[in-house]
Image 1 (cartoon, one colour):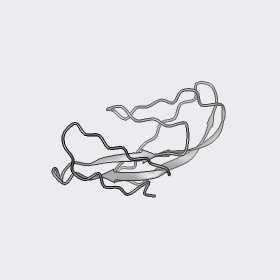
Image 2: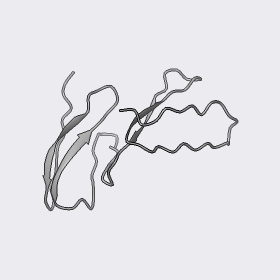
Image 3: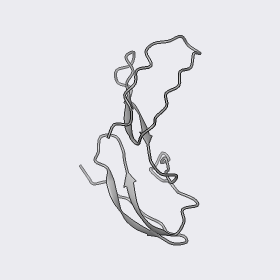
Image 4: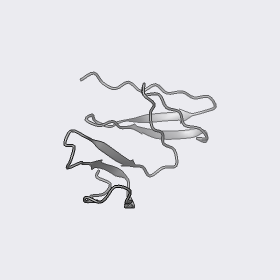
Length: 99
């Protein structure tokens, strides 16, 4: 689901423009100067989220014990989801399918 469509246009170096993302989803950022450049804004409807490090590792601190549905996203692939029961020191390894 797309989070928000927007166009910041062109503006001088040093000028700042804000965009408010008010619903969950993925928005792709395009650059009309550098067509090979890609960026994404992923908006989630949860206080528990993480951004991976260079090797894909991440951690979530402060998640209360209980049952959760997780979602993992990366550009160009389908979202991975599953169920997980959180207890103290729970770990989860997510493997992306080989394409």
